[in-house]
Image 1 (cartoon, rainbow, N blue to C red):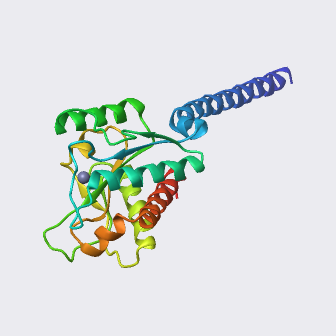
Image 2: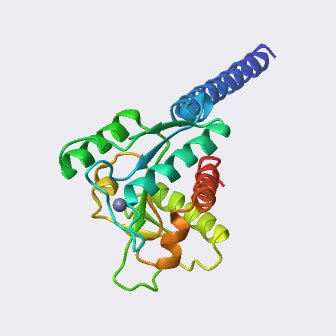
Image 3: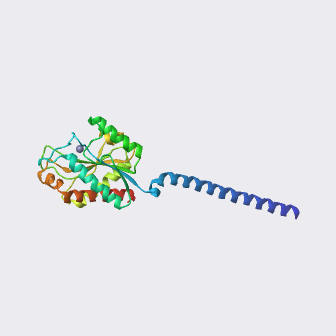
Length: 232
Ligand SMILES: [Zn+2]
């Protein structure tokens, strides 16, 4: 009888130990998960941050439109509009430039300075705003480029491209991967280059110089960015 009670007691102790151990493991596992979540979602909890990079500036006009409009000015106008729209959504926005001045004397130093800001600030996403140009006048439509080796960059590009196409049903362009553009290659956070249209196309160049159309492009870009941040 005593031996049986002893055996029952021993089993009970053993069972208790197993339960304790499992609970301990679950607690430990949860701690690990929480820890990972804290580092991964910290930005989302504290608020998203996006860098808008208005390409070119100063003596570097970028592409010049068939109408004489300079890319650097269109880039800055659209970038400032995206900044405002994202801030209205509670997103913290940093600009690589707020005025006409580029960041350094030479083009390569300018690009290095932009990349250095991006890598230092570590935003959730960088959107570099540019305008395109092509030797065939008929080519038109906003197009977004992503870094080929980054799934996040690709997803952001797809979402912004889709928003551009919603805003301009005539646009048949698709998001495109690239592994050689300096900004895509050197930036350590997800980055996309949004070419909002072709300055070599007469109709599109005229639209890109128009403030209302710039606002439409900015709204599309901001919509794509929000969809990316919200994980849609
Ligand atoms: Zn450009």
